[in-house]
Length: 357
Image 1: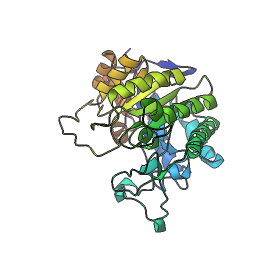
Image 2 (image 1 turned 90 degrees about the horizontal axis):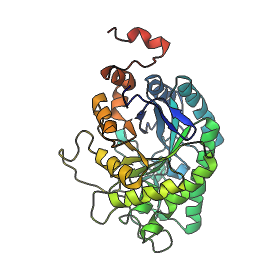
Image 3 (image 1 turned 120 degrees about the vertical axis):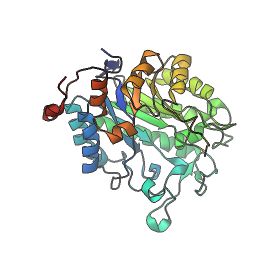
Image 4 (image 1 turned 90 degrees about the vertical axis):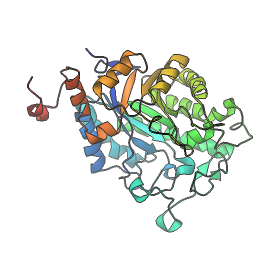
């Protein structure tokens, strides 16, 4: 059996293979409530053979949304709307995961096909929040969170985790990358605080560790909890790969099971075509896995089954996350299995499409 299609058990959850779908925002919810679009989108990925299917970044509070159309998990009706989607995915053998996040100073924007520009008050825009009065490029300065308000953010994540369990999710991922709120606290480029949540590495990592501990308490010992980190800001004076490795060790102690290793998103960067090639972020997964002794997931322009297999074979990651490849072909895992000569179970309704060898 290939490594890519070998199972992986984390805590009490057995994931049938190591080809997983990354969270991808759909900007199609109404007041945080998901709908038929999410059913067909996530359902097609689940029936496509992927071992673990993640929701998009799901906001833990109304002001934590990127846009007015973001999925949410702060009310009971959000969990109720997610439940049938989760049940459908699980019925076809996929492990269903939810990514929980807060956009922080990057909140209150239009969807990407409308330019991601900030919403006006007339359009329903709201005051963003952040660790310091340092705006994201093109945005107004955020409201600076007080210590008591930071405690409220931790409770927002805890509540979202609790609701996620009610909806039937089997894995929870905390989004602490891509320039969103938890990443904003981690990086000196966006965190200029002088209290216990700013300054030193210990202080800047305090919030994400508090969120990790709160989520772990809510989901119990049997549920895997992942953390997505931007492993580097690609900018002098910012968050570094060494910082990520040190934090990953602390997260492991706090109950984290896997680091989803991405990069960037906090400040504008100039990466050339030479910098951004196939598997360009695998190096970060390799470094964190080796340096922190924790399981990792590799992301970033992984579009071919043999490429994915070689990453696992080299010991650079424990699992492979795909995004745009699965967006282009929701049955990407089926095609990957055929490429590797694996025979995996298909939904009965699709068996007629299997190639005869």
